[in-house]
Length: 306
Image 1 (tube, helix red, strand yellow):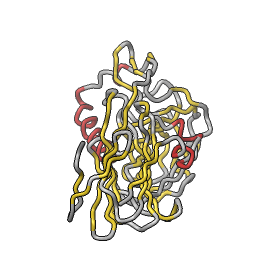
Image 2 (cartoon, rainbow, N blue to C red; image 1 turned 90 degrees about the horizontal axis):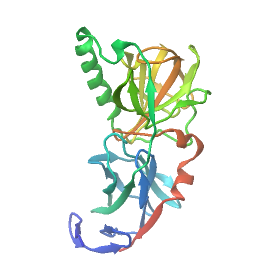
Image 3 (cartoon, rainbow, N blue to C red; image 1 turned 90 degrees about the vertical axis):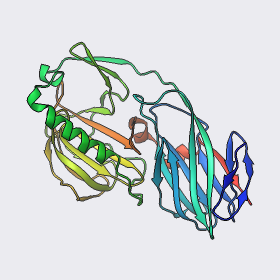
């Protein structure tokens, strides 16, 4: 049993199913999954009848800044979270909510059990230079990798994402998240997004509102756009033939941001859509068929009282 401290006093409150908390000055609820599959997105919520400040959730060693908004018969903060199949193993992982209410700072500590999910293998044939790039391109590739890593780890407080997201293109899925990719017989890791069938020149729409944090032509990803939608939610669009936005642009949900193409490391025309949640690549496909409200109904809720 672990004692959780507030700034001015020590209180102990035991919730069932492995959740310890310092009770707030008013009734507060936390909603989270007891267990979930690796690679799949989930939602968590912090809600109270009384206003609170500085809400956050800590997951996979990242502190995700949240905003408070009216909802759930009072006030609520939401976060979309998940785990990257390449990096995360099955097991129990800590999840911590933090907030200030009155003149006290409180923490609620919970545990999420992540279960293994089997993803198939996929063999692809591409140009040799896309498996073993020439030495002349290595500096470029390293630079672009750093820019992309920084972009997908963007953390802003304002929630601009709403569910369900808009499909970026109308085509069917041609390659799903999590596939173990083998290029020209060489294993190259896991597919970190969802590929949509899209002829060159198909309009690409933003699934969420947000702001462009990176746009340009990259060696592997081709024409690329990264959009920050707040709370660590970052959308990635690869292999585009035309980019119609630039870094710093504000984007409306459903806005056309460019056209699909056949650029970068591809086997044919398509759009790669990736979703990064606090730096963790997750499977975006199920989100197109659901909403925060529906996801929360599948989660566990605990009430913290003083």
